[in-house]
Length: 353
Image (cartoon, rainbow, N blue to C red):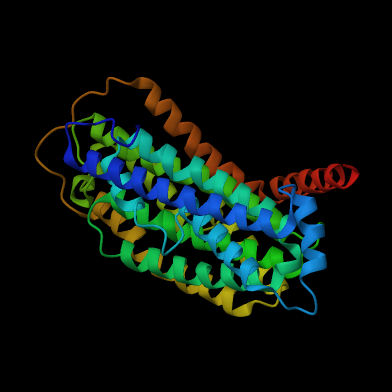
């Protein structure tokens, strides 16, 4: 409903229709996968599923029905986090939805989807660790490569951020695969995933906030609409530059430490090829992030003047995102330790139950 809120625009209706139909289909697949798990284990309790699978999965041999259940769960949850090839709805939905809705969609459903993955795969499907780690790792490489490469070709900033979001999904999935490969409650791989999601929320919402601010003042969403923004509105241009640099992974911003911790997690899990993939994908992403920065500072400004803002609170929200993006990077180790302490406390609580 929120995606199609701007019902007079065909792009909004198209995005809403794709999101609804594909979301319905993905939810059905997810439930079907849960049904297969229930049929094989007789329970939907996460610990109960793990215990039942321990008796079914012997000598590394997994029954075809369980592999089918794993694939169905991966497809359903892959849609929620916009992993390739289940991402088809993302660019059209982000571009067509009102920009504040795009910001919401790019963060909240993704965090919820990964929260489900963190609970289901390591906890319930622990006995099938080799299988799901392999699948998640392969999807991570495909997702980060596809998202960043296609983002290079985009001229609309919202659509570019949509493909960028797909690329960031790949980075988080790499951290999840590293956690599965190590499978230790005191390992920092899962806390690196939580930190990445925390960082991604600030810098991605901030980038969409600048786009919304520009639209509110009479601008558009193409890269050309950002031409000369450094001269027309220095603070807005500086804010967008900070968000672009953070999404790219430039220190000392939060995006750098988010990628750094995930890379360290993959190396500690002996998944060097996954760490190299993250570095290469990040290098590709520099092209389209820097293109926005170059347009703001080096392209000539249009002759039309920007109208006065009618939403002063938007500037306040933008300032909060900028400060959070900077401070969350400076205090990254403290935040990571808090995440690890929360994970340890949660693991203890689950064990007691």
